[in-house]
Amino acid sequence: MPLIAPADQEKLREAFGEMTSAVRLLFFTQTLGCETCLQTRQILDELPPLSDKITIEEVNLVLEREKAAQYGIDRVPAIAILGEDASKQAKDSKIRFLGTPAGYEFMSLIHAVLLVGGRPPSLTEDNRKRVMAVTTPITMQVFTTPT
Amino acid sequence: MAFVSPSITAFAVEATEFPDLARKHQVTGVPKTIVTAGDAQVEILGALPQNAFVEQALAPVSAATREPEHQTKS
Image 1: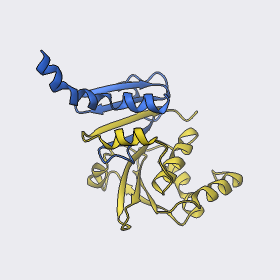
Image 2 (image 1 turned 60 degrees about the vertical axis):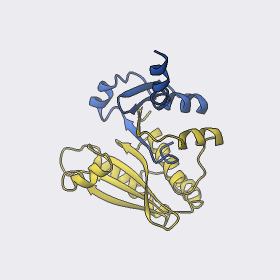
Image 3 (image 1 turned 90 degrees about the vertical axis):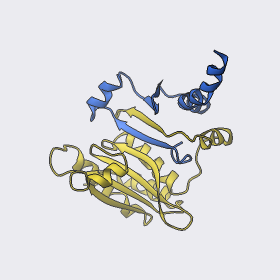
């Protein structure tokens, strides 16, 4: 049984239809000791059938620790969202999700996919300028719960 | 913000799955945002209007760039 209801699948298919560039979801997982990795993989697997612009790539945290470190991931399940630049090369959006993207987190993930896929950012022009002026590395952690 | 700036990385953290992180940052309500820039750190509680959120989130780097001024004054 699909985790995403058929009616929601249709809405997502329509929203994804407006994507102008490809999005790759790097899914960080491990075989043992991760209770929620399987559920996360199941949720993610339901996205590519809804859009030919979305792909999933699995990264094993234990076997590919260096690659995980490159994306600042040290726990699972985790997702890093990659977009592409003007020349179609992979470009890290630097947006990450730690934990199962269920409930509200699922909607946040969808918004992030649409943003990286070409939807205009919701930042106002003034705020965009402020944010673009940042040169010091900043890490933002937004803590949420599924409900 | 992360998408727009090459200097910003954003993590959405599911607090119940990572209680160690939630405890470390004393997360008792959500959303709670922790912004870290070097040694500077700010906490933003709740969801704020965009202008207020951007202002608070960039406060650590604003402080870092203002620091030399404070030093010349003292």
